[in-house]
Length: 160
Image (cartoon, rainbow, N blue to C red; front, side, top):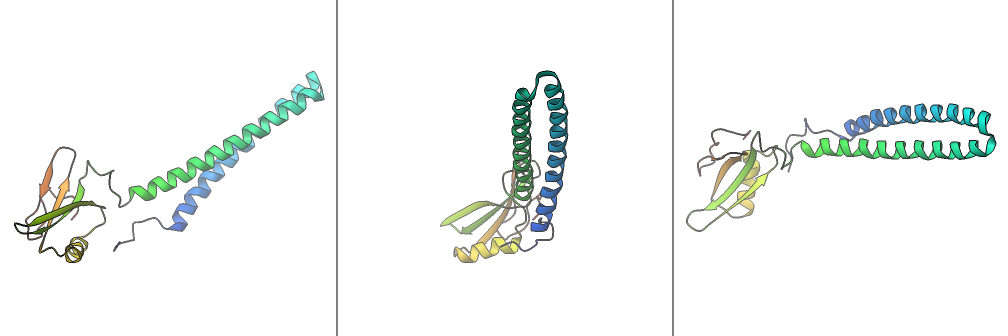
């Protein structure tokens, strides 16, 4: 139902973000690995090959853990950015959109909708639910505003 996808990140955007963060993770893995190898060389010189094998195993495990956690964090950040665009739940300060469908003196139905919903989308919902009127609204942390039952915008408005 999305009508305006210009602001939404596409697969290439998310891939780019993940690649940048993955590169950062790889740099940290390289730093940890280099430090670990240097430390392992010092251990080998001081304590022999037995301790060297143990130290190298620890460095490999640490490098793998950092890489795994970093990539998971990268994916989570990119996924969160995608969810924040046009989604519900994160807009209480700016105002979350509300679409109400009514049949005078019979019933009404309201639902919180994504920020990228338009009046036309709310009207489409009205047609599909056999309503006769729509009412646009905004829900903020400290107030709810409603437009008229003729589909006029609420004041203050949250982007309708």
